[in-house]
Amino acid sequence: MNQEHFKRAAEFVLERMDRSLIMLDGQFPAAASRGLIYEGTGNVDWTPGFWTGMLWLAYELTEDEKYRNAAEAQLASFKRRVEEQIETNTHDLGFLYSLSAVAAYRLTGSEEAKAMALQAADLLTERYFPKAGIIQAWGDLNDPEECGRMIMDCLMNLPLLYWATEVTGDARYADMARSHAKQSAAYLVRPDHTSYHTYYMDVLTGGPKYGNTHQGYSDDSCWARGQAWGMYGFLLSYLYTKEASFIEVSTVLSDYFLSRLPGDGIVYWDLIFTEESGQEKDSSASAIAVCGLLELVKQLSPEDPDRERYEAAALAMLESLSLNYTTEDHPESNGILKHAVYNKPRGWGIDECNLWGDYFYLEALVRLLKDWRPYW
Image 1 (spheres, rainbow, N blue to C red):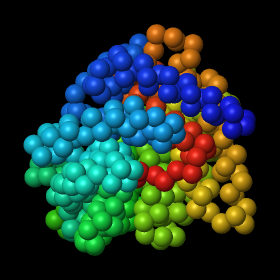
Image 2 (cartoon, helix red, strand yellow):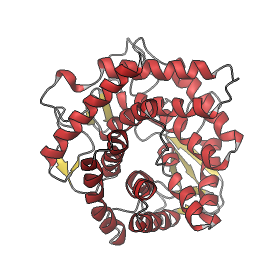
Image 3 (cartoon, helix red, strand yellow):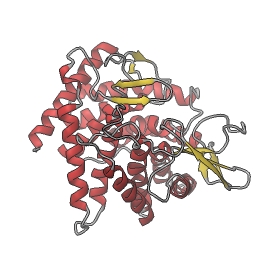
C-alpha cells in the first residue's frame, strides 16, 4: 500500500467526522455506537478526549480551522469538568486531558488549556499509593474491595504526569508515573509475555496480591486491548524516561500480540481465541497496536534486525483495517471502524464502532502522512 491509499483512508475518516460534527451539534460521540451510529452525549464518560483528539489530528492533517474551532469549543466542558470534579475519580484523566488540553497547549500555546491539564494531573496524583507505587484505576480509595487495583490501561494515562513535570519542573509527577510503569511491568506482564488486565496490590505493605481480568475472557487469558495498551503504553514511558526496560517490555508484548494474529491480521477480542472460535474481532485493539508498533519502529535503531518486521506488521494491519473494517459500506454511519468490542463480558458495544478505535485508526494514519508529535 502506498501513501495515496492511506491518504484516501484519512479522507474517509474526515468525511465521517464532518458528519458527526453535524449530527452531534457540539456534543461528544458516545463511547460505542448503536447500529454503527454514535449518539450524542455530554462530557461525563472516560472517552470524550478521543473525539477532541481526533479534531486536533484532523486540524494538523488539513490545517482546516473548522477542526481547531470545534476542538477549542469543547475545552470549556473539560475546564468545567476538572474544576467541578465531575466524574474525575478515575485514572482516565490522561485519556481525557492529554488528547484535549495538552494537545491544545502544544498546538496553540493556550495557557488556559495548560492550567486545566495541570489541574487534572494534580487530581491523578491523589490516586497514587506510595507504598505500592501505583495509581489506583477506579473505585473508592478507602474501599478495601476496590483499593490497590491497577490496570494495563493506566499506562496510557501516565504521559499526563510526565508532561506535568516537563512544564512545572516538579519531579513528583514523573516519579509517580515511572513507579507505576515499573510496577505494571513487574506484575501485569506474565513470564510468557501475556498480560493481566488487572492486578491488586496491598497499599499498606506494598506487597502483591493477585491478578485477574475485568474485560477479558478469563483471569488467565490475554485480553487483546489490554495487550495493545501495554505495547503502546510502556513505549510512552520510554519516550519520557529513556529507560531501556520499557522498550524491552513493549517488544515482548508486541511479539506475543503478533503471534496471535488471524489470517486477516485483526485480532479477536481476547488473544486466547482463534479463527475457529466464532468470537468477535476487536478492531480497536488492532488500531492501538498499530500505533504502538509505529512508535516502536521510531525508537529502535535502524540497525535493529526486528525493526523492518515490526513496520511491515503495522502497515499490514493498517491496510487490513482500511480495506475491510471501515463503515464505508454503511453510508448511514457516522462511525469509522466497525467490528470493535467495548466490553464483551458486560455486553457493551459488541461488534460496533467505538471511539478509541476511531481515534487510534486516525492517529496511525496521521503518523504515516506527516511528521507528528504525539499528544501523549
